Image (cartoon, rainbow over all chains, first blue to last red; front, side):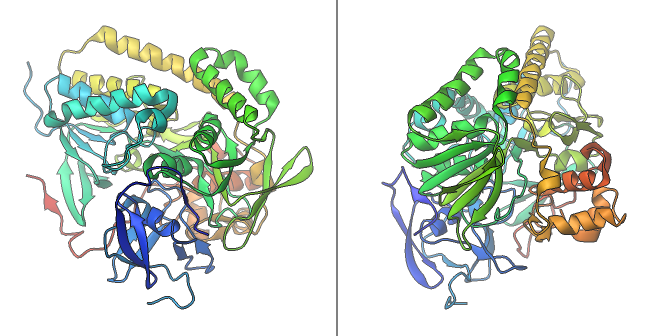
Length: 98
Length: 462
């Protein structure tokens, strides 16, 4: 089950994007964090322990939510919006596309 | 009338303090530069959802909808008269200039007068399992709701202390989310003792009583005197085990919203060279400031929660007062009656703040109790035991030395999440107070910059 639950503002336009090779749908105005965590359970794995992380402060302070796009860009998921066709790579699933 | 300053005055932050400061400068005929990280003004407390969202302000801000709306309108009204730079990060202050990054480019902007109003974030103290997906800060949980229309889980447990704890739990329940409970680390006796002080602001006090009453009336378990024991669940939260009066209990939940009051954002004031003092109430180092908001550096002013936690209403007053001080320092005429009234109201709000600190005290027993294997630093995963060992071995008697030895506070967040905890552990191990171990020095860039080829090709402002 996804981590975040939508409780309001659900009539926005859908935005297609790709999460670890899987076609997904977000809503217009979603941050990358919202897009990922309404479709999954984590954003990345810790470089040190390998434990999953899913962000923490949601206001650009903790830096826990940096994610990688397939094109090599790195973005802070809580403070950047999802864009149509974005390919996000979390490394969360064992068979994830690099 | 004196000449216009060579550089426009700069305001960093477009929350309650920054907006009121800008409004005051515009009223005096100046055209300030307003630099803000967010896409839209309002700060965290009055954060506006993205364009196209439909919920009314009454739903987003509750009792504070009127204040939020007034602040939003105030900025909208002055937009033509300010140089507004949203989505822009001030990442350095050096030689009377700011380095400002926007869209992968950085620009150096010189200043003569600078009002810093970057706000605050949640104060947290680690406990076992706090890095598990599903544990979010309390403020972050509120951001998810008002900025994205999302609850951070399907069954959310609220943990920590402070007025925000009850407010956000109430907002979640009102929005239709399931609130698994509210666990307050402060005790009933703390709150009872603080009632006379809190009655200095009966309206705010009444709101707090209302939220607690509403939650209880709607069957939400509310407990005080709680200490978190551990999160259960490996890859996501399944439950929180907590202790009260020596007895362990377990609450099933898939998310925990956690916060112990707020901590000020002080990095830019530090880089600007401002002198700091330890504030016992905030249990943190804050820039020294006069009642008007002047710092120890001429031309640099601080306002709002970044100068010491005082809340949104005080931030609006402090922003206006700092702007009046700036105008005074430019030799412009200002309304001294208004300035005196603002200072008087700010002093009153500081007295109320003291009562709030009594009602929702910092859990001073945390440092001795946190288990050795708990990660304190989320970025570098430095454990409490590692910090204790460095302190016990006599290797670190000061926080920057502890950082050099253990990497605590050296990660991407620069100690925003772990700094308070590290200082508590160090001072507890040394048998001193948190004021005796110094403060983490700010380092540019104050936040990580997204990598792009052009980021360090500095452009001088025209």
